[in-house]
Image (cartoon, rainbow, N blue to C red; front, top):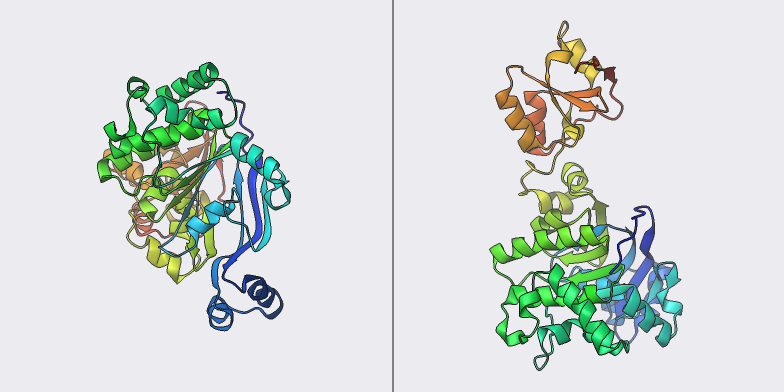
Length: 372
C-alpha cells in the first residue's frame, strides 16, 4: 500500500443533482419531477413510485471521512449504492476522480470499483469455506493477481487491522467485530482511494462498536484514505466524521462539521436530531468567545496579558477545566501569539447550551508580549 502526500482540496467523489426513483413508471415520474415539480408524496400517489434519493449534491475530498446519517428510510443506503453504481441513478451525475460513472462501460466501471472505490457492508458476507487470508485477498484474486503477491498484500492489510494471528482461521471462528475487521482489511487490500461503509458497526455491542469506530478513523487517517460512512447514529457520526450530511425523505437537509450542525441547525428537524447531544467535546472556543474589544469595553482596566491562555480549538470541557484552575474570571484565546477572543463563564454556559456567540466573526486582535 502507498501513502502519498494528501491534497485535502482534491474532490474524489462529486454528486451533482442525483435522483433515484424506484418503480415501473420511474422515467415518467422523473419527468414529472423535473417539469411539474411534483413532491415525493405526489409521485407516489400519481405514479406509484418511490423517491429514494432527491436532488442530492455533495462532494468528498481526499483524506476526508464524510458521514451520511438519517433515520430508516431516509435514503442514505440508497445514496451510498449510487456512489459506486450498484444502483443506476434516475438523473444527475456521479463523478469519481472526474469520471462520470453513468457514462462508463461495464469494463471501465469494474476498473473504478477495483482500483478506486471499495465497499464494506453491514453484513460482511465473508466466504465461509475460505480462510481469513483468502477472504482478505479475494478482491485481488478476482483481478487476476498471483497468489503469492495477493497473499502478501492481504497479510499487510490484516496486520493493519490487528488480525495477523488469525489469517489461517475461518469466519465462523471469529467474533462479529473481528469479521468486520476482515471486511475492512479486504477493502484495504485493493488500496482504494475511497472506502464506502454502510452501517458496518450497527450490529455490534456498544463497547466493541466504539473501539472499531476509533480504530477505523485512526487507520483511515494514517493511510490517507477518503471514506463515506453511513450511519443512523449521530453519536457515531460525530465520533468518526470530518463532515456530516443529515438526510430526510431522500434529500440532504444540512452538511457541515458536527460543531456547525449543533450550533446552527438548518431547520427544526435537524435541531431535534441534535437536541440530546452533549456539547462539551463539540463546541470550540472560537465559536463562543467574546470579541476582545467588546470584552475590554465591558471590563475597562482588565490586563488581558495576565489571563490564562487557550487555543481556538479547545473544547468546552477543556475550557471549563482551565477556568476552574485559573484565579481569573476569563481565558484568553490565542492563535499565532495573538489574542483573538476572551472566554467568560457566560460564554461557557452558552457553549454548553449550544448557542454560538454571534459577535465573533471578525474580533479585534491584540498582539501578545514576546514573553508570553
